[in-house]
Length: 439
Ligand SMILES: [Zn+2]
Image (cartoon, rainbow, N blue to C red):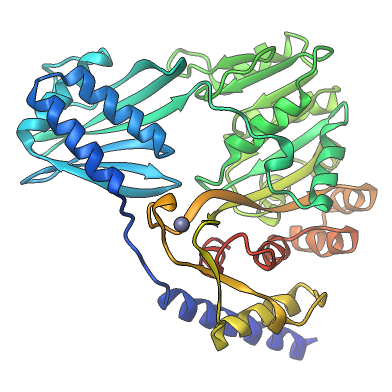
């Protein structure tokens, strides 16, 4: 037993070393595109003509065109830089002078109903625009910095289409688990996520699949990011005396069939959500944890009594998003010995021998205007799903540890994240560096 454990530890260390080595050699390339100078010229022209309304509109439109989630205005001593967050990566788009920035800042604050004369305390607001018949809301927040204010704008695109369930990049086994659990009349499905792992997309996609007229669906969100027909969406306002938990109780009195609770932040909310699941509701929610094991560990050992969670919980979906390699400039690469070794080690780890590791192809990118020389376009999900069955429920009732439960689930088709990524790497969806970074 002891020997085996030592072997595993050595294997793990070797894997970590290989991972570090591969990541240290990673080609880092700056995001650049001809579009960026086009945006800069357009913005500077409208600022020159003092048409700041156009400036704000142009910046917002371009952020949408480039698929950004946020616009950052960052002030430094000599200049202000405007950056977009595109697929989580902050990209410098252009620089402006402080004089130019002052005009934009005034327009931003004016459009968002912020007080123009207040520059020494943070403020929150929102501006809205209709762009090609799409309602775009932009939440802005300011932060006083040396001799200026920084602004971060979060784009909420109400008409952004929800991804189809089949486009979430589930492999069929994973998909089967999830479809089964969300077709039940009661139970709790938890999507767990480290920041920026795309839980929004997954939850809304599941909801839209469940959205039929014979059911009442109520959501509790903070904030509402998409609006959906026939779903009753409630935005929690914790500024008033109501807490997340008391909102949830109010939702339950509305006789829903399905409830989506944006995030379980505390024990009280978890208890109410659990109670809802036990009283014949399907509850969807999220928890801020990194893996299925960590989720089990937290709810069993820290929060709820095992016999309650054994009856209430149905499925845990742990997920990450990885950037998808640009299909326009993707090419097969020669594997380095380190890459060959890590693929082999991981395949051994998950007991997968569907083909020899040396036959597995890895991919790299050349860079093209379509992906703004960034190599990636859009993202794909990597998942780990545990669906509780009678055996696992019994184990939870008997105080099994998260580790024991995970080990047992391996006999019941648990899909681990490693397994999912190996399969997705074989298919050439992403690069090895990207996957090593997120797992
Ligand atoms: Zn490309």
